[in-house]
Image (tube, rainbow, N blue to C red; front, side, top):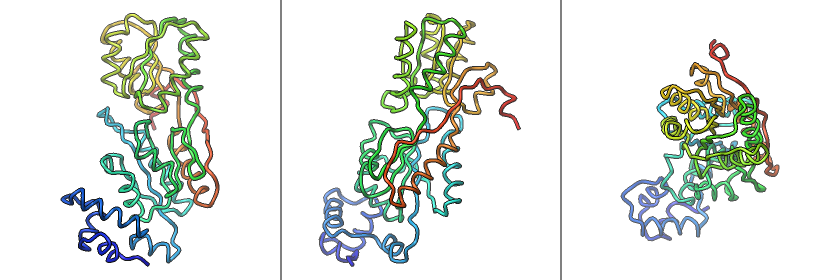
Length: 329
């Protein structure tokens, strides 16, 4: 079996230097880091923690890779529900789980991230909130190093499954209900992030609706920010007769702006977060069971880790008008 000493000898560095590189310590030159990385790959070196787990036939651990929403000062309710659902299901399946956040490895290469995850004895990963611009995570999800489930991204392969609702259909349905109920014809549509898989699917639903109902529609990106949606609505809201938003937080920002402007426009949200019940105005929204989605993702990862192939898994949703009495307990 290849040892860390063999890697150090092959790279021409000290054993302590190899350890620093493997654990992503700073103050190691790019040239030295590259030599160690090549030595690890050429010798097919596996850190001791992984080797020990394999030799004792312990179950591999699962990592949750979570992208927190930093565009609001409100608690990231969606991520907390994701984590809760995954951990509860992992306990049922007797799986060990660690939670990591995108900010912890945003500067790592895919090779560095793979080494780090293997050093933690990770055998499967669930990724929440991956975007089209996340090249490292896309490569990680499409590789053969881990079994992987991505939530809300259409990435599948033999080793990778995706779990999501039908966002195009859900956006179409909730927007249509709002538009028909209020006899609207001119739509201000505030989408999420331009590089988001979810936003792209939601826009497909809105484009279909605009064609079918011959709507005039202005598309703006709110970046999932309550403040940005508020500013967009302040600028354009008076010229349109409804505001459709790709998230509840943006819908709250839009509704607050309309209240400040002292004009009424029906507003539609998306997600079904608890905060919607405290706004004071009822709005149509798409209610997702985020804990249930995450539990499904954990079940799907367990299936992959038992030798099954990746699939595109769709989960249910409901259209609701959330009220304060619906959320208090």
